[in-house]
Image 1 (tube, rainbow, N blue to C red):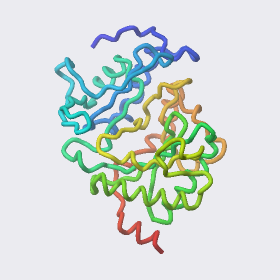
Image 2 (tube, one colour; image 1 turned 180 degrees about the vertical axis):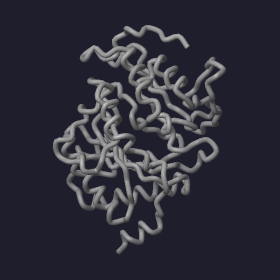
Image 3 (cartoon, rainbow, N blue to C red; image 1 turned 45 degrees about the vertical axis):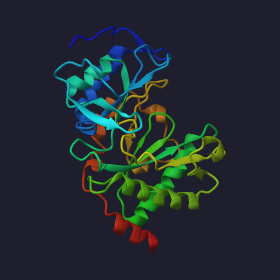
Image 4 (cartoon, rainbow, N blue to C red; image 1 turned 60 degrees about the vertical axis):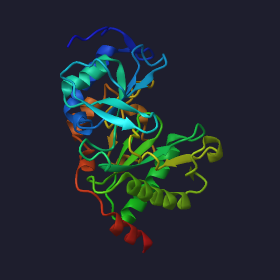
Length: 289
């Protein structure tokens, strides 16, 4: 594979180039690939850098023969989409060479596409919220998960929010995952009515943090753990230890320059999302008590 335009500046504010992006994905490939393999990908491409409008790409033609793909019929598009599968480091670097800064995998894998490996609560702040507000909400989510006897995992979105994942081990449908996370979000909203909202319409939220449980739909995607975001500073979606989720935590601390060192020190903090799944019925029973 021939890498092209390595000197092209992708992040003008910091001077980071396409070379820096590719070098980062080489360094973290062993950590990020388990969250990409066997999952249809939605590529967020910025071939001219983050100051220029990027675009999402799901459908692919004329890929090299060594890249695996998966055809899936899309009801919303009323056509068959040829998804790229990121099965190895070579494909990961091919994507980066196409200007794919951000990588968005499905929640489910080939062979079990109707059953997600995890459920997600996306804490999505409004323009008037601070990251400290997001931290407050995440702490309440943790309290509720503890009450439910659930071991959830969290990561920065790499942008402005926090993503909280619940391992399911492909035991439940998307509808079951969505309904369960909706229930958890109702508990959160009940405790923080002035700070959170489950209303999808932005204007109707009135400046509150959106408790987004609708990410739990087949084909819906979020930025993968360890992927870079097309944002000033080249921030990364960084898995966290729960004790780190406190005032003073900053999204900008996790970048394509700092994340490799953090991984060397802490290893993969997100591995639990690929482990044993939760028992929804038991969790609901605990919450009802």
